[in-house]
Image 1 (cartoon, rainbow, N blue to C red):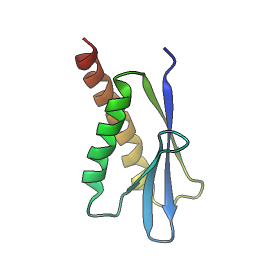
Image 2 (tube, rainbow, N blue to C red; image 1 turned 90 degrees about the vertical axis):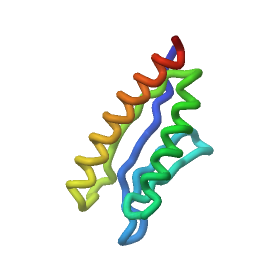
Image 3 (cartoon, rainbow, N blue to C red; image 1 turned 60 degrees about the horizontal axis):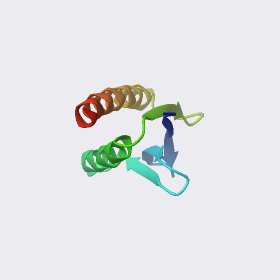
Image 4 (cartoon, helix red, strand yellow; image 1 turned 135 degrees about the horizontal axis):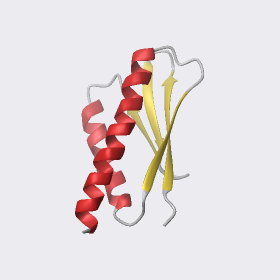
Length: 98
């Protein structure tokens, strides 16, 4: 089974919104506003959606940062988050598929 690759881009919208954009499909793009008070809830919803996809197909992530993105700490944190979500997804899928 070929994995579905989800492109994840750390970007800015406007001058004051840092966004982690998940391109699930051409028609489904999920933006996680990292500066929002609802960020954690948005991340949980995102993981649930990706988990539902992963029941039937393998998922991989391609993380990138918008050129000139100004906040190094966000880059590091988001890169680690993508690694963590990959591990969590793999663990969950092994449990679900077995």
